[in-house]
Image (tube, rainbow, N blue to C red; front, side, top):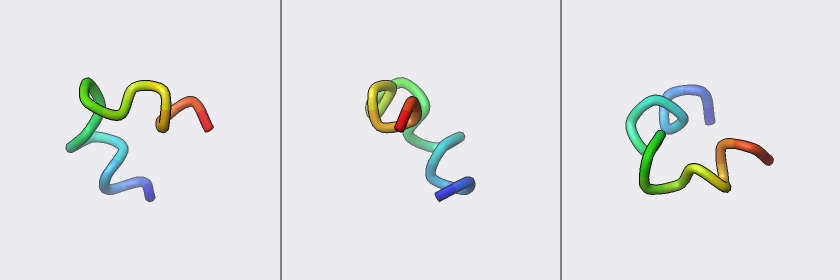
Length: 18
């Protein structure tokens, strides 16, 4: 999940919060 956090930092902003 850490890797996707940077890639989809803007698209999945809400997902990053989880």
